[in-house]
Image 1 (cartoon, rainbow, N blue to C red):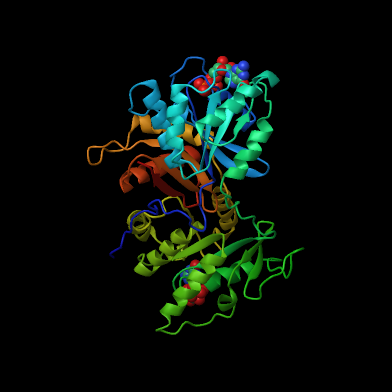
Image 2 (cartoon, rainbow, N blue to C red; image 1 turned 135 degrees about the horizontal axis):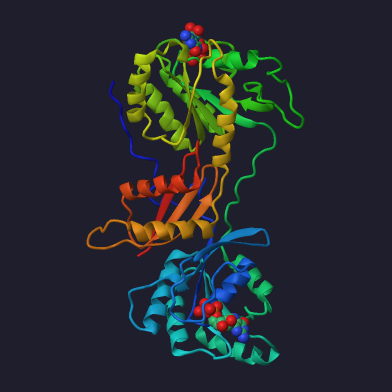
Length: 453
Ligand code: GDP
Ligand code: GDP
C-alpha cells in the first residue's frame, strides 16, 4: 500500500502558540571583567556559570534557568558569544545588538568602581534603540562609598542604575525584583488537574477499540465509579490498570458499541479529534493483521499535531503469522516515520495477550511528556553537537545557534535562538540527537527556531 509521508513535526518559529511559548529570556551584556558571570551566578543562586579572570575567554556554557519570586526565566551570558566584529568596543556593541534582538529583556552591567567607559557608552547607544526593556546594573558597589558613582551612570540614558555587588550579594534581591518586573509574564506550565491521567483510545473503525475497552474493563475491579476528589464526565470511563486509575476519555460511543454507518467517516474523525484533544496520552490502535492504511496515518498525524504522548498498540496480534510479521515490519518502517519515538505493544484484545503491557507504556510516555531538561544541560549538549556538526551553510551564510531553552512541557518544546534559518533536515538531526541523549520515549518533541539577524 501507499503512504503519504508528511514532514516531521517541526514548527517554523511560530510564536505565541497555546503551548510551548518560551519562558522569558534575560540577556546579560557588558564589557569583560565588569562582573557579568559573577552576577549571573548571583541570579542563578548557585555556582554554575564559570567565572574567568581572563577577559575574552569564551565560556562554553552560556544559558541557564533562573527562578525568582516564583517566576522562571532563562539567563543568557552574552560573554559566550563571538560576534564577527573586530575590536573590543565593536564586539561588545555587537553582542548588545544580538541580545536586544534575541532576549525579552536586557541587563547591561557596568563596573561602578570604574565608571562609564567609551565601550559602555557604545553599548548604551545600541540599547537605547531597544524596544525591549533594558535594565542597568551598577556592579562592584561593595559598600556605601560607591553609591555616588552609581548616580553618575544615569548619564548612559538607560534609566535608573541599580547598584549591586555581585561578589557579596549586596542588593541583588532588589535587582532581581526589577528583572522579573521587566520580563513579560510567561505562561506557567499549566498545572495538571488532580486525578487520574487522561487516555484516549483511537483508531479506525473495526480495529478493536471497543473490544479492548471491554477487555480492560472486564478485568476484575477495573471499572471504578469514582476516585476521591474526581468527578467523572459521563462520557468517560475510569479504568484501573496496573493498580492505578486512568480516565479513558470519550468512551461513551465505544461502550455502547455504536455501529458507525458508512458515510459518517467525517464524524468518526471529528470524534477522534475530540478524544485526542481531551487526552494527555493516546493509545493508537492499529490492526496488525491488515496493511497500514491512510486512515491509520491520519490518526497518527492528529496525535502528533495535537502534541499528545502516544503508545502504539498493534492489535489482533493473534492473527499475525511469521509472514505477516515480516511484511508488517516493512510497513511500519515506512508508515511510522512521524512517530519513531512511540513505544509499540503487540496485543490482542480478543485473547488479552500483552494487554497488561499498556499501562507501563502509558506511564513512560507521560513521564516523557512531562520531562524538562535544564537550560544548562541543554546548551552544554547542544554546543558540543553543533561544534561537531554545524548547520549547513545557506545562501553563503553559516547560521549560528546562539542558545536554546526548553520552553515548555506537555509536549516538550525546545526553542533555538539562531542567527539564520535552520533547514528541516538539520532540525530533524537535532531532534534525533536530542532523543539519543535525553530519551523522551513516547512523547513528541517540538523544535521552534527563532531567527534573529
Ligand atoms: P565578566 O567578564 O564580566 O563576566 O566578569 P567576571 O564575573 O568574570 O568578574 C571579573 C572580576 O570581577 C572577577 O575577579 C570577579 O571576582 C570580580 N567581581 C565581580 N563582581 C564583583 C563585585 O561586585 N565586587 C568586586 N569587588 N569584584 C567583583
Ligand atoms: P472498533 O470499531 O474499533 O470498536 O472495533 P471492535 O472492538 O468493534 O472490533 C471489530 C472486530 O474485530 C470485532 O469483530 C472484534 O471481535 C474483532 N477484534 C477486536 N480485537 C481483536 C483481536 O485482538 N483479535 C481478533 N482476531 N479480532 C479482534
